[in-house]
Figure 1 (cartoon, rainbow, N blue to C red):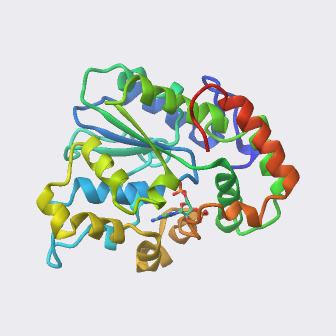
Figure 2 (tube, rainbow, N blue to C red):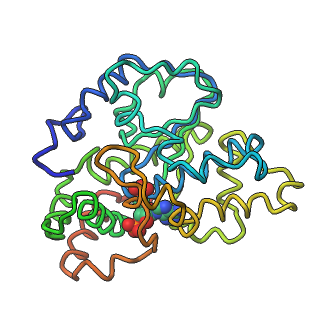
Length: 298
Ligand code: A3P
């Protein structure tokens, strides 16, 4: 999102102007339900991947074979787990969310601080899964996304790094975003699970996938583990599988965003090819300062 499109801070956070109204509607009207699962992230941190994984884990008993295949094969993950602030509350009418089958799956880029109190303080059994990614790859991924989605490469990387370091970014500064969910996960580990993109990438023995499944209330049984169900889900949701699906090559899930923009390299450390030493030094300094004492490292 470009600076010019950001609007004034709402609860200490910047939003793209076009969605502020949706965020307010969400605050006013959202009614949590038992078993709701909310996926939270900053843009470009692995949201699409986590949507595919959560959808597949939570619905694995419904879509079991070729006569009843996973909708992930024909729909983009963003269609299966809608964004609260773009999709659900971006419509002309308020959405009717009461008829959605439980567990309802939603996603958001809204920072923890700005989530409605109805979600944070309710007694319902709500699960929030947060995914974060090292900030260098996030900046580089955002740069590519902006260029691809808007069909231009005109924005210098220096601008993105500068905005990052000044905390002028959609949905708030990197550090406020990650620290909000990080602290919530420490204070209330049964409600908030904090995941790292890099850990999921290295998840050779499926430790993190199993933890995720357990957290959202759909643990894998020993039998499933033996039958290779976890492996199948991991494969189905991999970048290489999703990217090759027709829907993700040619489809769109919002008027301005082609599905293919959500699948690029998915590499850890790709930033070395794009950030120069002075950008890295500047970002490192800010990150060290802002995350100091939190126990969170990248
Ligand atoms: P890169 O631009 O580094 O390739 P988001 O989904 O939050 O918008 O994040 C997009 C980033 O996640 C992109 O990173 C994209 O390639 C990567 N990604 C998308 N699907 C993925 C998957 N199934 N596995 C791993 N990474 C994925």
